[in-house]
Length: 121
Image 1: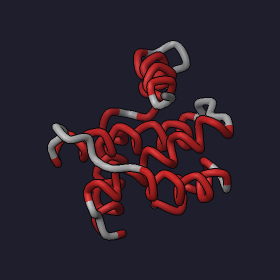
Image 2: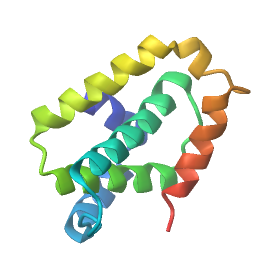
Image 3: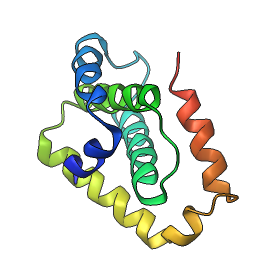
Image 4: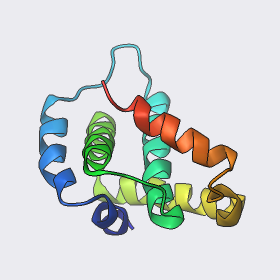
């Protein structure tokens, strides 16, 4: 599943991901559960780009990839831990209903762009 999302957000992600992991560290006051919630939100954005064909340009992909990799590093997750979180987020979104989530005029479509923009410094 990780390869599926990563293939969508592109090769620029891989180069940026290395830099993101090297420079990222958890915020001092952020708890493990807050970091995991942040990672889940990032995964939700990536899945929405895939499943809903919501727009994501190269800069968006790079920032999102860096954010995902930084959260993974902050949580010190093995690949299986990330895959487990990815599957759970995917299952939750599927249960919410892709048709409703992917409506271009829907609440999630608006939140998607807001959250993606929030990744930028």
